[in-house]
Image (tube, rainbow, N blue to C red):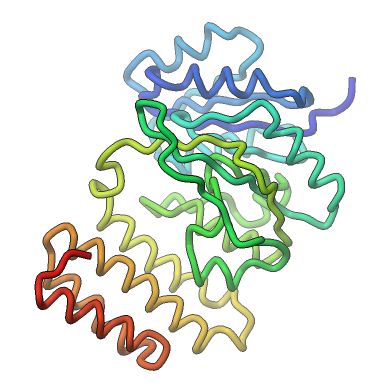
Length: 297
């Protein structure tokens, strides 16, 4: 038998309600040279029983709850494939997802990681929007600082070389959010990226799922921008980084304003203005006027 090419890792916490759909979508892949690992991260529901029902088709790893990054890292440690493909337990793939990505990396052996576009889907099955990019390829580290969500599909569409994931030290278990973006930054600093321009991953988006975690996302996003600044080429650690950080602040200022925190929103705008007065000044001014006047954003 040929060696395992791809190890699929599904982290799962209290996912009995959805993990079957994720598993079934992997087992339905046209590409067959894979192993499937589900990491049960301390679930208190029937997640483990649901996974065990698949028998030898799925390898179950059970551990005490350590969070998403710890679960992904356990999957990486257990993986026997050259490549690791990640899928969150509440998301799913279309049948050609792995075949398209493996064809891509065979055609471009210099790649360290790759992704696909994605459909963002409501719990009722409605496609809310397509998560695409602007032809992202090659050295994408500056792009990741400029737009954190630029890797479409992110934690449910990326496939990466296992040895590079290990070299990067795995996912950062200290982060409570955007741990995937942090990893893509570290991978982009040592390897090249490409994507399949087709929506082959499906991302479930429940109402209110972002607003509940907005402040955690903000703090984590700013921390990741700071901790990874040194990964940028020296010429981009100044103005490019400041403009990128100001962009993060203006984005979250709008969310804070929509959530009713006008003082916090205006404080973020002032921080953004101090960082990049020329590049972001006009945007900050227009947002500030709208917020002071109570206009909807």
